[in-house]
Figure 1 (tube, rainbow, N blue to C red):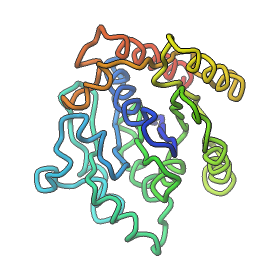
Figure 2: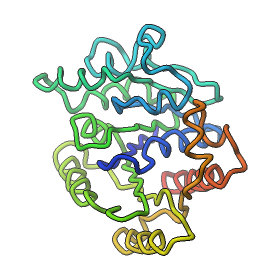
Figure 3: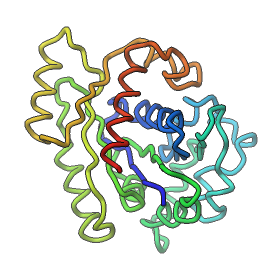
Length: 257
């Protein structure tokens, strides 16, 4: 049975998609059969793996149709250029699909039901959710075993986190009692500044042992990789960012044993 991890933060620009892509990549490198579901209408995980999120015709079935219930998830899954690593892509049309199902039945459990149809084939399913507390994000939480929270080590880093955790508790009470917070990942960490150290200390103080030891550094290679349609580990495996994501992935595997 696959371990399903929802990567989320209602703040944008915190490295959420970068974390989802690179975690998936390193899990696959470690011979774990991995499916990355792009469940963010921005489609950055899709383009970050070299697919054209604007070319609806060439993509064929995407998460839009899966959410609407007009196609099975298996039909949306694409092989990437990396062994053990599959992608369920999306396009900006996913935002329209979200609006369309608002008044329909089972609107909160569509992703969970879709994943159940394929999870036997995978060791891990990673969901890249939108930077908002939306219907899509709630679907991601209900479908998952774990919630992974990337937090940028900058001013206002913890803003909105309390609200997100309240939403998590609500989902646990009403729809998914097995949901756990896998941990909090410090991203865009700059060891040269006292601010990054102070924010990391605040994260540790608040989340204690749930804080990952690995910190993802502010790194130009991490920033460049998506524009080339590849994970940072494939772009420059010797970069500080790649090494950090590799170490972080080991921590994730340890916590999900």
